[in-house]
Length: 427
Ligand code: PLP
Image (cartoon, rainbow, N blue to C red):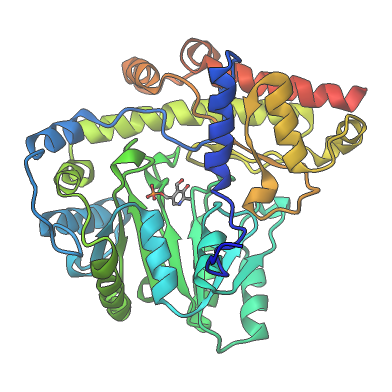
């Protein structure tokens, strides 16, 4: 028995990372694998950001723990310009990825974590590591697997004075679903009534297909921390840069988190912070990049959604990001006859039999027997697809011929998966 912290004992590496390792191993053995497991941007880092990074490669000093003042200002300006939000740059905290900041927030804020089922894979394990309670909010397909104000109200009413942290992620991982203005407003009213702190995880905001992302901070500014970063819409997950913007009312939390940050990671890599400024600044290149990226992702997710619905899956319509989250429970009889009774078995068999890597819905908080899977539709040459999308004339859509030409590995993997699952319905 090793003397491990009780909270960490038995904790497996993140599901996303292990499926990717298995896919890589199969590829090393010469098998072809469609990698729909890891949610990494297929697109290259925009040239303006790379140029800025190269110019600042010599920056070697530690930076202030909260982040480079010019970057914090650029982030506050960007939030105002793109979302109409008013955050003081003094209350912006830059960190080595939003995942790390989320961990520090859960460590620093003493409240129960409240997240929808399904949610991104790391929120709940972070609560477990810290020894916090995690409450899963039930969702249903009729509401697109979104949090409803009624469900939030019921949890809050059961213990109205408990401090809570609600994490809301939209466009969502794993569902691709976002929230409308009315839905955000209704959730905001409940959160305000019960003084729930909302962490608004908007890491996919730049990939809202309609280019019309709206933050819950519009309706609940005093209680919302906005989380965003470079990993998804700027294709720079490996740069490891994210930021939280706190309202004045939660400045005490920003101060406490900065103190913890100063004792742990000290500051985010200096050249990366200089390079990041270009990602948040208003430039023709960033705007064109985002239009093209949304067009490609909107087209591939739209095509995937149609294929999955046709085969009998139920899933939310994607509004943005990289993911589809089909539930194949309607085909359970056939799948069960083939020995698949839960989502983990379904994913393992899909990888072994048709070389499609995806993640089981159970990793995202869904019941194990629900046959849901997360598909990250990002296995294609993003640089080529982006260049082709930017050559489309205005109003022209990325059609099937475009997807065959530029996103074929993902499109054929989705077709293969649908045929394979559908064949189960008939045997
Ligand atoms: N939030 C969501 C919903 C994500 O999908 C991810 C990454 O996969 C993150 C947060 C963490 O992003 P990062 O730490 O790269 O900023």
